[in-house]
Amino acid sequence: MAHITDPKVIENTSMDIIDGLLAYKRWDDKFYPIVKRVVHTTADPVFAELLEASRDAVDAGIEALKKGCVIITDTRMAQAGINKKRLQKLNCEVRCGIDDPSIEMMAMHESMTRAAAAIRTQSALAPRAIFAIGNAPTALYELGELIEGGKIQPYLIIGVPVGFVGAADSKEYIKTLEAPFIVINGPKGGSNIAAGIVNALLIEASKGGEVLCI
Amino acid sequence: MAHITDPKVIENTSMDIIDGLLAYKRWDDKFYPIVKRVVHTTADPVFAELLEASRDAVDAGIEALKKGCVIITDTRMAQAGINKKRLQKLNCEVRCGIDDPSIEMMAMHESMTRAAAAIRTQSALAPRAIFAIGNAPTALYELGELIEGGKIQPYLIIGVPVGFVGAADSKEYIKTLEAPFIVINGPKGGSNIAAGIVNALLIEASKGGEVLCI
Image (cartoon, rainbow over all chains, first blue to last red; front, side, top):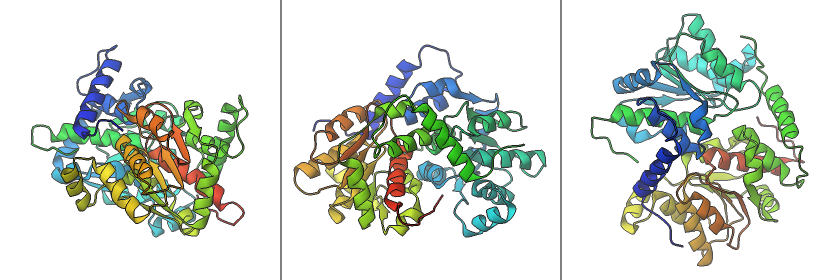
């Protein structure tokens, strides 16, 4: 059946439609590419209103990626959704410990979720990192405790867990910490959105150089 | 900070909330677990209204999974989101060819998207499979051509690509084919939802046996 098959045409047409949908408001120049990517990921303009970032968040994320940083996710899905070619060009790396057998044991012993245990272990190896949390509120609470205890100093926290139990509260909590943040207020979010935000930052961090990866 | 840390309590509380949100309507007993899981995945009750399935779809999916079938996805993200322990218990397997180097070459030679090329190649190896498409409308069009050409006979097509260009049309198209389908009408969808629907079917297929995987 007749349909558009050129990925570049699909992407560009889609971005034009999103520009139209979001034209009702003046957006901060630095923040707009993130907003646009999340609406592109979800096909839902409501996310433009739910996104919130600390003043320094986008710059902090881009600078860290330009230096070649570690990104830690709470799910294999978020990890899988991050563009590997772009990561490689910037010498960045994405890690996720959720299904390591040692994490399951640690979670059981310490009565914590696997997501929190994985964050504790991974952040001990990379106390300066970008954290992209798309699923588990408990991962955000663990990050908070580690920050308050002076054990880690994230470049950026992308806090977009999804769900009706704890997700919204965990995002309010993350906003009170001493760390740059990008969150989606309320219960909505997801690993696809966490990956989408990282991908938007990777595109911005690649600008200036000749990095073309779709 | 005080918060719920028991994953079972979080899941059960969340499902109770969703029961409340969806209580305005009588749902088909077989379809309801799918609806509920998608609302759980997205924290967005609007998906309950957008989901549509052919009459035989849920049964067809469950029966195929019980027999131990192949599931083919269009993205690594959907593949990553499908519960591996449940797959293993049912002797099912999930495959995705999107980033095979040969697929990139084939896509270039045949002027097709990588997603369509990957579907053509993977479905030649497993012409009877469940297809879970969360991203690429072109993957659904390719499936259609293969079905109409008599080359494949899917157990079930989960068609939930996302986007403002082509996604909604591709789902309308899939509904005209001779194959059981579950779709999300309109532009919304995503790899997380494709994985969520497979996971809901895996849970239903595991019932009766003692399969407990969170």
